[in-house]
Structure formats: structure tokens, C-alpha cells
Length: 146
Image (cartoon, rainbow, N blue to C red):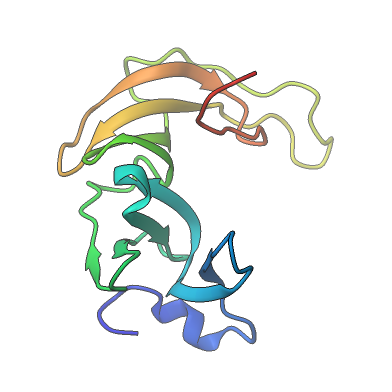
């Protein structure tokens, strides 16, 4: 583990890892340490995250990895990639987003601030809001719906 990526994993008893599954043979190959994989470039690249908000793009064919420059921590989780440098991401609301809080909450924790889904371009601080108020407990995916 080089650089700041995945350094916190050194203290974990079990380390998260992303594997590639060959559908024809059923064999699995370790691609990278990390979690929350996002497929990019039609499957040529997979972006993985560590527990500290760092991202790394890993080429599936070669296993070569490079840091992914996501600006700041306003968007802590990438969800999908409709193009090579654009990601759908969970983001904290900005001043332009309406203030909304969760409903049906635990009496111990109470209401939580809703998140937003934004399209963000790498190395750019701003993004385009797609969904302005989404419960952080919700599941979000990207793809063809049937």
C-alpha cells in the first residue's frame, strides 16, 4: 500500500478487496484493495475507495493504479460513472440545495440531514445536482431499469 491510499486498512483484521469475476470460467482475480467499486470506461477501469475518502482508478487488464483527483470531501462517495471524468456522487448539500431532514428516525439519533446526488467532474469543485434531498440510508444504483 503506497501513498495515502488504504493506509487505515493496515490496522484492520480483514481488509476489503475488489475482485474481477470471469463469467466463463468462474475464476476470481484480485483487482485492488478497497471497496465501493465504480466501473468506468465500459469496464476497462474500476475506481475503488478506501476508508479515508481517497480514490484510485485501476486498469482491469494490467492492474496499474493511479490516484483519482476528487476535489474536497463534499462528495464522500462515488456511485456511478456515465463518462470517463464524470461521476454520480453522494454529496453534502450546498447553499443552493434545499434544507431537508430524514423522517421515521430512531429516537436515539433523531433526524439526519438529507444528502444530494450530484454529477461531479474530476478536479472541479462544483457539481450539478440531480436529486436535491435523498435519505442517506437509501440505496442508489445506476443502470438500465426494467
